[in-house]
Image (cartoon, rainbow over all chains, first blue to last red; front, side, top):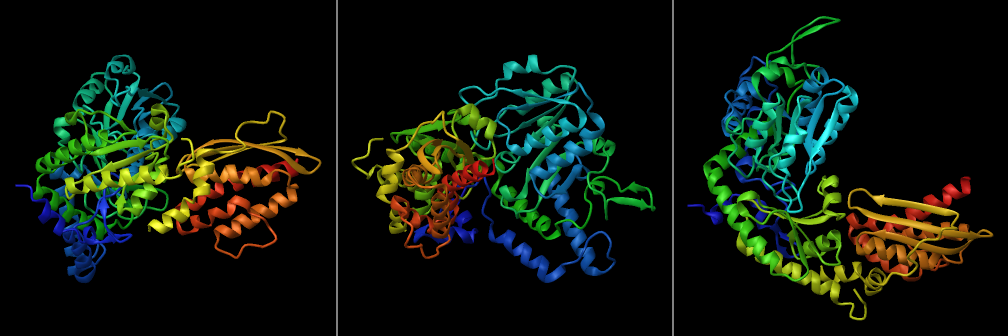
Length: 414
Length: 145
């Protein structure tokens, strides 16, 4: 049984008040709150076994190395990767994608090659490819988005050609909540010999994700969007891909031997982890994974689906609300974008904040999608395992208060 | 908090937002300048028609939040009739206002005085400041021609 009350008790921040009102935190697609277990892991590491890893021969270094490498195993299990050798720790999803774009792209892309993206990508799965396309002479193509906020999969046949070397698409849109059928897209990509990269920043925290079932070659995601600390990202890539790639950053840890003019590389995955990594936060990320595993990703997903259904229903009852993204709960996650008639999202966000409700207002790092929706920005409420229907009621009350607040100038025409 | 909100969105600000003055374009304008807040998507274009060192006419177009659009409307009102030097003094006074410094009593801020409440919302200061930053940029470019 999914016990939200018990879960909430693990998150100290959920007790705080904002502007004298109990915090309602609905900005989980931006970053999630951290349970006590994750915070304790950080304190414990720095209090008990802080040391640099992989080189010390003393007890602390040994303990820290074990703990760090154990999280690599846990991460592999979490996404059902066949081996922890295919897990590289980075700073965030953005760095994971940049790492792959550079280390793979620079030696595998040439003029005439094509990278297929979609119109709903976060800038982090768009700008790295613009850079690498410019550097290699490859071109970019885009799967269009329909008016309902889905990918136009019918266009895949036309867009996928033998020139397509990579398909890089988000698993779940951070703006629309749309869940894309990655397994189908991966199959189509592989048919033309292209690799499949998945931006999992929004999906891995919320859905059971199995890289073998999705049959993706690369998956990128971030710790901080799944109860873990900031400063830790994950790049999963099939072992043979990592083996074939040149390093991204050079320096300590990633070498096998160094001479003055040339070096040889460490084994994967360490070949891609130059310099002292974010040891403490990776170790605390392990606690986040354990927490999610205990709660159960299927149970979390079921809880969020119920919340999302309630959120969509309550929002659609409010006059003057425009909702974006698919309505079908089976096709979407818990990031819900909307706008209030005649009001800019930033004004809405400011008044909601005064009511203690934290949402995101802006373009969500997805400007091409905003242009497609013909809006400058949206308000986005996004749920996680600790949210409740009562909090959604608080959001709806705050939305009504916002509308009343801006309607108060009685002589003004809107 | 509600009092602070009322101070941020003073009635005069909401009036300018809902019924902005000086909107449109001036094809003959010597100063045509636009700007945006890339993080929130506020956009403004200002056209200033100069006549013997004075700002004879101002028109603006834009989209964005209530603060950015009201500030543009209020600024346009206040700029008309000023010399470019006076306009710069007004802009300097507005910058001081946002930094919480004492306003210079010799400079009439007009309705723009209502923007004082924005100071308590640091993330929104850039919304208000977009209008005068854009105008300042346009005036400087024009002076440099």
